[in-house]
Image (cartoon, rainbow over the protein chains, first blue to last red):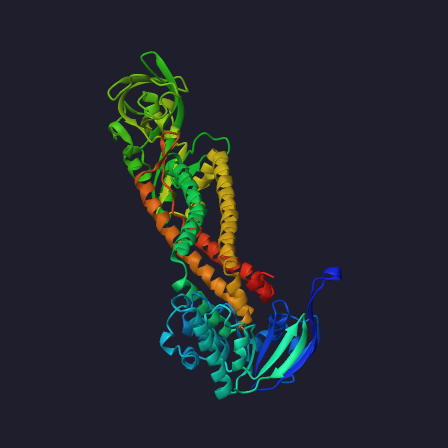
Length: 228
Length: 403
C-alpha cells in the first residue's frame, strides 16, 4: 500500500545540513497497524509528515496505492489529504470554535456532501470513538483523551486509505492513552484501517502489528509483533 | 467553488458564534470609529457649505438671479422679465430689487452700507428678510419713510460688534439720515433691525423699492436684479435654461454660480479640506481595517495550517476570512451609523458655533454614506482576503509549528 524508497529529508545546507531522513526504504501493506519508534530526533515525525503530504522530501520517492503522491501538485495534494489520508496530531489540532461534530463534518462538506449527510457521517464516526453523546461540545469542554478521540473521528470519518498518528498519546495520561489506542486497535481489527503511528512508548507496542525503528534518520529495525 | 463557499461560511459562522466576544466588540468598536472618521468630517464640511450657500439662497440671490447685461446698471424692463419668469413652469415666486450704495448717519456716527430696495409683500415668498427682524417689524407696502437696518449697523450685533463701525445707539424708532450715492439725502425712521448673523445681510439696510426709484429718478420697471425661487431644489440649472428659453435676455445665474464667484476661495478651501479629509480617512481606514483583520488572522495562523493539513482548500480558508471580515465590517458600519446618526441628531439640536455666529449643522449626505459603506465593505474583502491568502500560501508546517 505504501512504498517508500530511499527517502531523504535534509534541512539547511553545507556543513550545517541536518539529515532528518537519510535514505529510508520500507513497505506497508493494507490493513497493517505499524508503529514508528525511535528516540527524539530520529526522523520519525519527519517521515510521517512527508507521508501525509504535510512536508516535502528532499530526495527519493514514495507511493501510496501505486500513486507517486510526492510528485502531485499542491491542489491535488490538498485533495489527497482530504479524501485519502487521515492525520491525528499530537496536540489534537481541533478547531476550538467548532463543536466535535463540526470538527468532523467540515471534511465531508468539503467533499461536497450535504450538511445533513455530513452530520450523519460525523455522528457515525463519533460513535465509533465513543463520543456520539458529546457531539455538540466544543474542544474546551472535552478532556484531553476525548479531544484526541474527536481528532481520530475526524480522521476516520472520510474512510481514508491510511491513517497517520503522530504521538497521539503524548499529552494523555495512561487511562486516556489506553482508550485512544483501543480505538485504533478496534479500527484496525474491525474495519481493516491501515494505521501508521509514531510513538516512543514501548508499552504501545502491544497494540500494533509491526514496529519500524528509526535512528539518526535511517531504519535500524523492522519487526513483526507477536500476538500476546 | 460552491463547496468552498459552504465550508468558508461554516468556518466563519462558528468563529462568529463561539469566538471571543470581547475581541468582537473591540473590533466592531474600532471599525465603527473608522466609519465615523470617513463620514463625520465631510458631514461637518457639508454643513458649513450648506450654511454658506443657504445664506446666498435665502438672502441676496434666491435660487436664480437675473442681472443686467454688459455694463448696464439696471434691467430696464424688469416687469416684463418678471412676467416672463413667473410664467415659467416650476417658478414658485419672483421679485425685483434695487441695490444702491449709501451712507447712514445717526448722531454724528456714519457707516457705509448697501441699501436694497424691496417690494415688502413679495419678499415673504422670496427671502428670509421678513423673518429675521429681531427688533421692530419688517417693511410694509406703505413704508416709504421707514428703513430696516442690519444689526451690525445698529450696533446691536453680538457677533460682529467689535469688527465693524456702527451707529451706536440707533434703535427701532430712531431717525437716521441716508445719503445715497447720487448725493440725495433722506431721513428715515428705523422700523426694524434684522439679524442673520451673516455679514452680507447684517451690514445692509433695506427700504421700499419705490423709495429707490424715486431717489434715483428711475423709470418704472428698472431693477438691479430679479430674484427667483423655484419649486424643486436641485433643478436650478434646468430652470435657468427654461428662463432663457422663455425669452429673458438678461444674464441668468443660479445661486451656485453667484456663490462660487463670491465665496469661491472659501468654497474651494472647504472642497480641498473635504477631499483631503476623505482621502486621509480612507487611507487611515484602509490601514486600520487591514491591521485589525491581519492581526486577527495572524492569531489564527495555526488554525489555518490545521485546516490546510486536514484537506480544507485554501479557497475555503480565504473565503472564510473574507466572510468574517465582511461580518466585522458590516457590524462596524451598523454601529458607526448608529453613532453617526446619534451625533447628527445631537448637532441638529446643538449646532457647532463657528466664528461665534455661524451655527453649523452637519449634513447627512446619502451618497457619502453609500460611498463610505461600499468603500468599507470593499476594503473588508481585501483586508480579509489578502492576509488569509498570504498565510494560506505558507507551508503547513510553518503555519502550524512556525517552522
